[in-house]
Length: 288
Figure 1: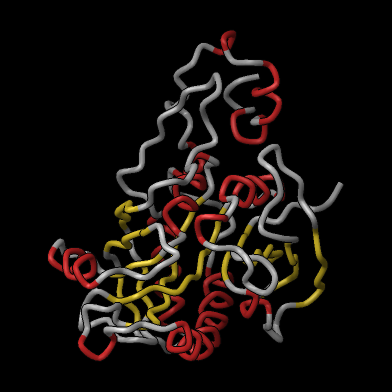
Figure 2 (figure 1 turned 45 degrees about the horizontal axis):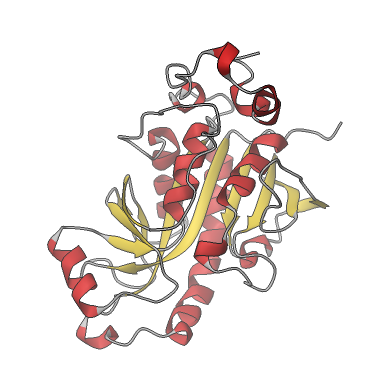
């Protein structure tokens, strides 16, 4: 049996390019929900075994709405992961969050339309608490690590998750600003929801690439603009992730690991047998 890996990282393939990452191996994971975005790269970083996943697949082939979020998070669970650090590009909705800054949000606002964000249904109902969608312990460690890596960090704030793949209209961008939102992206909300259901701690390192179209100098956001900034952000993200992994305590003290304790509603004898089998890695300690 393959060894368990307690820490997961989701981001671009550039995050793998760390000189410190040793003992690398590629691992393919199958799930009841289909295939993840690609194989996992498992390696040793700062003395801890870590599993990396390229969110959009090799060569960035998958649109945000095409991501198999359930397979990605379930595969991390099968690997033994208890904590996920997610790094992703975002647009800034505030003047004081310029490109190259990193935001560690503690809230999400959902503007997606056509995505599956739960493992449940089809015979099993569950309702997890999601008032505080980010693990506070992991957020503190992540923000401290960003600061130690030399980047300007903003602790807390709201991440607007939009459907995409188009960027915002000017009217939308101005509306989000009027609501007091902080950053905007296309991927992290479903990851956070599913991680909570899987009892995995989750944090977002939101890498600011642009000011979104509300800003007079960024009224026509282009992929080229974002990629140029991302190249610089990637180096900072690598340092921050390595630093966060080194700082993580071995045991968790948060409540993420018991998120399903009072969430499962369906009577055990009414749950389809195959569903019990499929979801055993998540629900097994509560329902046999």
